Image (cartoon, rainbow over all chains, first blue to last red; front, top):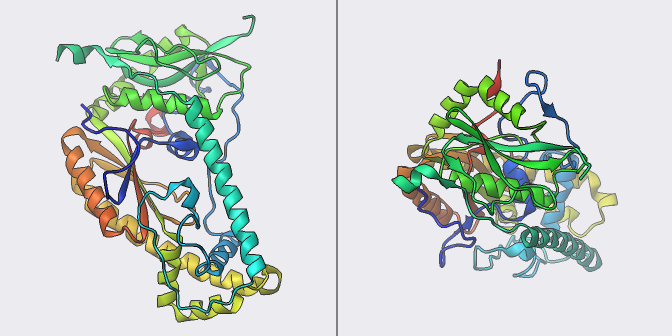
Amino acid sequence: MSIVTTSAGQAEGGALERGGASGLADVVETVLDKGVVIDAQVTVGVVGIPLVEINARVVVASIETYLKFAEMTDRLDITPKEGGGLSGLVGDVTGAARQVTSGLGQTVGEAGGAVRELGGTAGELGRTAAGTVNEATGRRPERPRRRRDEGR
Amino acid sequence: MAEETGLFIYGIVPSDVEPTPDAEGVGSPAGEVVAIRYDDLAALVSEVGLEEPMGRPADLTAYETLLDGTAAVAPVLPVRFGTVVTGPDAVEDLLAAHRDEFAAALAELEDRLQYTVHGRFDERAMLGGFLAENPDAAALAQQVRGRPEAESREQRIRLGEMISQGVELRREAENAALIDALTPYAVAHVARPPSSELDAVNVAFLVAGDAEEDFIRTVEDFAEQRRELIRMRLLGPLAAYDFVGAHQLAE
């Protein structure tokens, strides 16, 4: 039925990145709090099991977000063309490095800028590592078959 | 093996679905996935220890891999991650009690798959563009630039709020444009909440098999038109996680 390959990556030069959910963040966002809920109150035999707590919700309008945005403007002109920013290390596959000239002054507290960059890098590395571990353990088993398909 | 076990339920499928012997379930070691049948329905399940904490990255990945793989060959209703019952009898009871709802929901998903379109604004393109169009914000940005947060906090919050509102407006516009562009090729859509402050679009679409090619081509065009501003990703085909819900079991 499916005509689409699920291999990660994108067509040569294309702007769209393709693939199944890869990396833990995608998986969490795709599956958590979804699906049919079977209510233990109505259905006999449902067992409570210990679930590892995962909080996928992000609040996008908060003081913290505001400060983060302000900090982004700090590094607008100083981020190196490649490898910087939010998505550098996780693989910004959209290809060409993009640069935006904001027209703002270049004066920047260099020490402050450097510290921020380091912080960002550490965060990205952490996330990349998590993704890698995940991929290492997440082997893709063969898909279930459908009996009907064989007769089609 | 004195530990008590239960059955972890992945999803509900038509009874002709057969897990392959190497399908790996949740848990460590990975449980063997089997189908428990009732009438024309089946539940995909695997045995888990009741004391074992569930929800490690490998568990979530196994759950999704199994459901997405199943969705590629047959309709499947994902059951919420973490649903465990006492044993085969409880699974049969569950299928029997909700047989008609499950069957109807599966019929709706026949030959339909979910795709999630997710896009994230390029930080520099988004902010650069915003500041270029908003002189007040640009002036504020220049004032706080390089100054420690402690002494520019008020201004930073004001600047950040302006940007946040700008991003929000842009996000709404981009989501609307995406839904507009894809509505002809999708059976249904669900807007998903943004997963980061730089989220540009995040929408799940239910797509019929014969519309898949057009759908994907349209997403590609959408991405191409925005390649400088948005990093676009297409996740899928997936099981229809966003198109089944609690309401389906409402008594």
